[in-house]
Length: 378
Ligand SMILES: *[C@@H]1O[C@H](CO)[C@@H](O)[C@H](O)[C@H]1NC(C)=O
Ligand SMILES: *[C@@H]1O[C@H](CO)[C@@H](O)[C@H](O)[C@H]1NC(C)=O
Image (cartoon, rainbow, N blue to C red; front, side):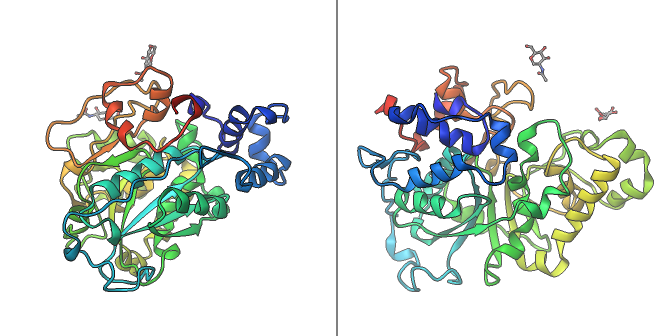
């Protein structure tokens, strides 16, 4: 129920604080807009203090971020895993599986479920290293991840939203304009240089299969691997003006571009660095700002640079669209075929729908990974 409130990150956290801590209910609560636009924010200071204050605990769980401690996942065949052969914290250990995911308040519940799902199904959970891309409250989020997943190998990276703010133009859904959505374009420079491959995962998905299978993807000459959807009408991802303007549309000459979803990508970071794809994507965002060549957020520049060049991965690794469309978030069914990953892309999110007691049938597949602890469900 709390997560129904789709305010800005701070507002959501503030809601939790206010509702779960009756003594705080008199705390003045500015509208979400005010929180978003102010630089110095006394409310934020209050939250930071309160979240770290050990007196705000309920049943052993930190009250501000009420997440249960995840069970410790043991793999079936520990001797096949590499953990222990190298220093546990060494990010450059070549046997690690690297996963990048964003952490912010609005999607925190989703991110935690995603991490949980990766660990639960990994044959070697101790070999998975998480790279968290964070734009705000990095120390608090680090503490939270540590307490929820005590044995997790991870590093938190600060993604400066100012890096992209000037480049972002409005899109059909305001959630698509969040700077953190664009962090996936900066992994090559943010992550440790020794990390040569990473799996990028959105925050609104769960894996139901061993991530090491996805990690083993042969990218061939490609920089990005992702499931392709060649029957989708590719032209609708760009405006009519884009297609008539030859200097833009010629980018697809000699390519057979197909839609792919950027929520699940296997990325060769070495090739990315070598060809500076970050700059190529930024160049398209600059063109978008001036000529408006598409309506969606961070996806189209990826299509412009990579569509028709990605290594096609089995569709089972991104059963996307479960959140419904960008307007109504209506219920969707799975695509035909096997399932290794369920993705609630679109405007409906399973935690919001479950809390509203109007879930879609497939939302029940997300629920087992939910680590959110609410006083009501306790
Ligand atoms: C694809 O979409 C474009 C633009 O929306 C439309 O003009 C075209 O007719 C569509 N093509 C097909 C085969 O549906
Ligand atoms: C959303 O729902 C409204 C009202 O039920 C309907 O009129 C509209 O066509 C729907 N939009 C989409 C994109 O499905």
